[in-house]
Image (cartoon, rainbow, N blue to C red; front, side, top):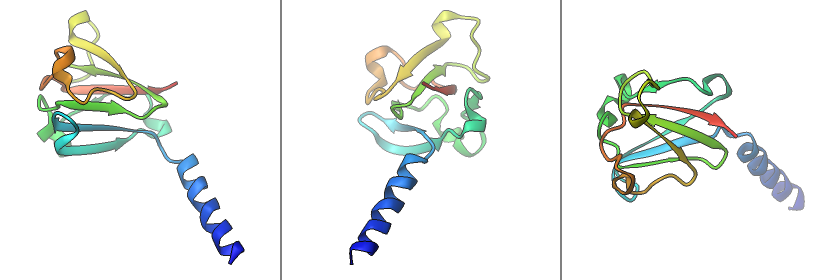
Length: 117
């Protein structure tokens, strides 16, 4: 009995310890509406993610946005993560914002990038 419990506990701890950090976002405030969780793997750190193709329904429609504890994200009002205008991007850290209206970023995100701490 003890050995089965120990193996299950070890498997749980191992899988959570090595899980990729992720970003979670939703179309409505308070983490509701249509939601999506996007893992950020090591090879995707700092890569610009446009809200097109399979996540196009989230373009200019995100009202809640939050990265995991070990990620620092930057959100952008335009595609391709442009940094040429200070009013075009904002930094978001854990726990994120359940209501992006509080920072004037409701329904305007078109791309984002994340880096681990």
